[in-house]
Amino acid sequence: MSGQSKVGGVEPRHVAERLARFGSSIFAEMTGLAQKHGAVNLSQGFPDFDGPDVAKRAAIAAIEAGHGQYARMIGVPTLNAAIAEGWAARGFGDVDPEAEVTVTSGCSEAIAATLMGLLNPGDEVVVFEPYFDFYTACTAMAGGTCRFVTLRPPMDGKGAFGFDEGEFRAAFTARTRVVIVNSPHNPTGKVFTRQELELIAGVCRERGVVVISDEVYEHLIYEEGMEHVPIATLPGMRERTITMSSMGKTFALTGWKIGWTIAPPALTAAVRAGHQFMTFSSATPLQHGAAAALRGAGEFVEKQRRLFAGNRDRLCGALAGLGLTVFPSHSTYFVMADHSALGLGDDRAFCRHLTETVGVAAIPPSVFYGTPGMGTAFVRFAFCKKAETIDEAIRRLQALRR
Ligand code: PMP
Image 1 (cartoon, protein in one colour):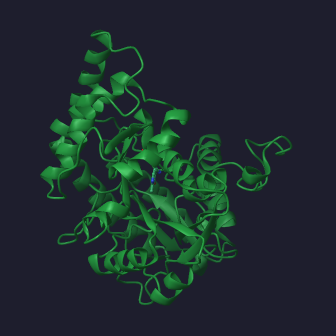
Image 2: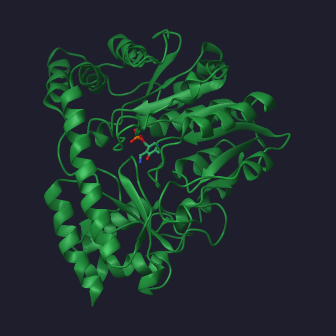
């Protein structure tokens, strides 16, 4: 594995200072290593099967109908409407599809455009660690700085990752502009409880801070009785929250890169201020496909949810049987485990061994922490795959016994 300082495998001689320290994305690095060693790739989170036909047919029809020019900057009307309809249908409230919904190139661009649109140089962003790495890199692109609040694994190995209220409050300063909440959470699989979200919301209201709520895994919760609570639906939060999501995870179409934000007009203005000069608009035919998926692929989503729940159970069972401490994952594509009992070094060494010798690729999660030294005992596996892929990974993982 190359060092953090290299970008695309070369020294970052020409890379701007604010980005050089981020190095190459770990996902590209691990997927490359997985391919080189013919490893089962449980590193980057993407399914190894295709999305729903209804989406593909609608996108093809849009191409054939001549929808080949720039889409509206804010999104094609039918997609903006489908996003607003979906939100209302789940009881989250009415939103104006024209004034409050913006289509972006994946949730990735939503994160970048929003931070670019919101932050002034020196502004601070509170981020829970471990985190999705776009939050820190895009904050840096926008000239901001992150402050970290650590999510710690449950002491008893049961329950869920959690945070300390005092540490959360202590992360705020006079320069805090934004808190980023990601529930369900990558990489831990944590679903923030209503109580936790109320605590976060209360502090944000007190401090006059905006919330960016990344909800890309909103439809992938595996536990009976656990609910997805958008923080925007809590009292006093609609007017200070930018909710974002995308179709990639929900419909196993991560390569389409169609995402969106939902926010009141004053915050939507910030999103669009960034979006108009980053991509201006997203692929027109794929927006038509996304609208069809949102309106007509409910059965696909449910089937996929059952597949991933089964994968999670089998993979977690196998990892526990091999001596790893597996932390419960209730959602997302991922599960985190503690590998230290196996004595194979830190997370990078462990993942290198796993990929090169065992033939299974995973992610070393220390790259998802802002606090130095954190996460080195952990490993993140993706289970968003066909059942047979997970079974093959489990078969190979047995080599860890020897
Ligand atoms: N947010 C989180 C938490 C993610 O895990 C990902 C994808 N790994 C994204 C955003 C990016 O979403 P998209 O693929 O729609 O750009």
